[in-house]
Length: 477
Image: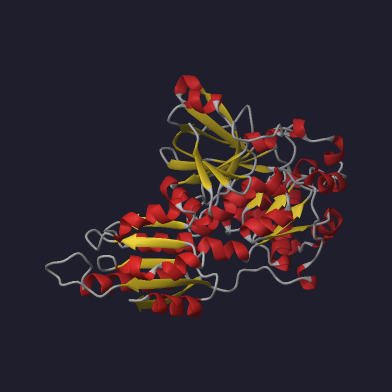
């Protein structure tokens, strides 16, 4: 919302004020001058199978066939995920558990599988004492140890329970556990000024709480990259956006050319910096050089979260979900229609591939930005009717706001509000509106307003992730 941007922001002179508001010591550095942040190392996860197999026809425990099936499913997941390395072994004593943890590394998260009554409770102490995040997978009738997982969590240990006969839950366990080491390898680029909750604005607190590095980028340096964008790459970007658009409404050729050039430059910037996330706090002042919305969409489609309006809370939310489910998020503004029990989400930048990098692109129009007199070039994306969604936002680095919904309307052509719009049915729109952002202690409009939407119902995974990362979950509505 440009109403919340100052004239200094529009003129691109908001950098210094952003640093003061953040109250932080920002790093200004190119990747060549600092350790590269690209995630190239696989995330090590220690898999510990506890106890000896039970007979096939009696006793509380998993039998040899079930154990082999679980191992096979884990091997398949390791191969398909591609970015995890499993250190797998059996433990019948605390000493054997400690040896496996030492092999995996002092910070390695742990997936435990109990295969005999009370086998895990006898060997779990080194995991808990070492503060390893732990997913406990428990087959039905594999023992009574499952009931201790919530007790361990209530005592402050980062433990969550997957009690299920579905072996696919083992992959979910790996996806949840890999978030923690992946965040520690994450490098975030920021064009100040920064927005969001006070904790999220602090690079020191982000580093301490999540392990990610936040690096401030000077806009002047990026302007040089825009000028240096290769003409061939810019033409290819123009062709891709224009040929696949259902319709081009307001943008002229120059609007599209500028946006495409910025898109190419943003891709080159992320490659050069080996970065996994981007937040731009001055995007509403970019009209003269070209709006970044096409570039944001392209980055998100390629698995690199990019947040508008310097919103670090939304960016961190997108990163957590990207690592957990391999899907991008649609960061947007909220507005309610309680007569329909509905919540609208709208923004002028959004990913095309909400199903993930290998999914199909959603249909889209090319439009002018709705808040600057129809100028510029942004996508208006037509998301899938009937799709279940999860709406979320990490705030204060310790609380996840979350709610489920279903897309019930996508306007054929947006009029009021930002260009990409979805109308979602929610559980209780009136209650949701009355309590909106009540847990936030701020008057900043964007911090109060923004949420991030993801395809699919991920509410249970959010709860699991919060337990593993020592966070709270507040269900909205």
